[in-house]
Length: 294
Ligand SMILES: [Zn+2]
Image (cartoon, rainbow, N blue to C red; front, side, top):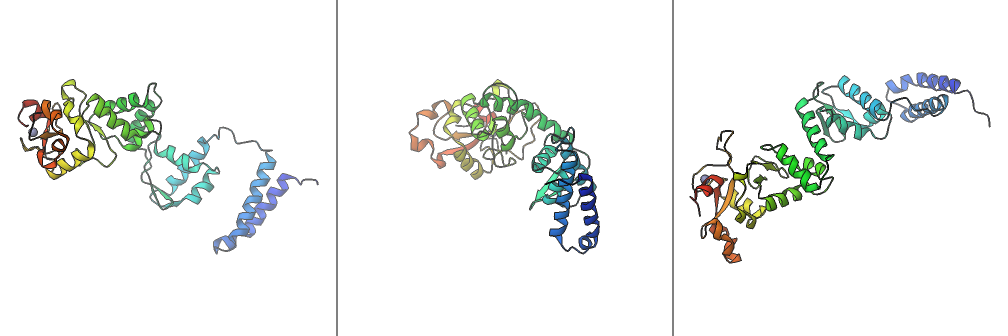
């Protein structure tokens, strides 16, 4: 079998598509249109003998997707459209790159995408770079997660960011271990209602702000019960986790206080009394340090 001239096949496919223009306008004969497009692609592939366009290891596809989204900024664009524009199967990954490393705000819903602003968000881009740099750093998952929390001290770190740095491991679980082992004041939504589920925030890196070892005895679900019952407010000083306006150089976080024992003696309590909700009260780091509670 002798193959025809690819250029002739290309022309024939273009002609066929031109003939179908009215069908497209009337939203008819989609199958026939797609067949003609497929013929066109085959002719192109043959004409260039399988040579890939230069430098199109994803970068070209990403540019085309961005250009398409920019052209339709503020409108919802279907995933089939993005797949067609990119010309590659990995279009979803390119969208993730645009969002992540390039900082474009692209909303997603029901398989459709919408570019919010033509300008990338530089804060978002810098944040992504911080997380990426730590993900690529040496050391164990624990060391990298701790470094991330310390780098972003005072800020909420999402579960997704923790997982990235932990190389797909349970980043939130790693953060919990760090809190317990190093006694770092790491908050979750159990400790501070402004955090979303899965978020973690290291309140302070100062040695003096470490948790008292007795706090190891009060796991996250127990803290959640005590703090939410007390409306996230210290029973001694009446300062709340949300209402309080702490100056930048001061540190405030909630701790669990036991009504029957001072922090140093809590571990000696019998287990049932130790975790008895009615004997537990919300306190804060400052009152505990001052010896007010307990
Ligand atoms: Zn207090």
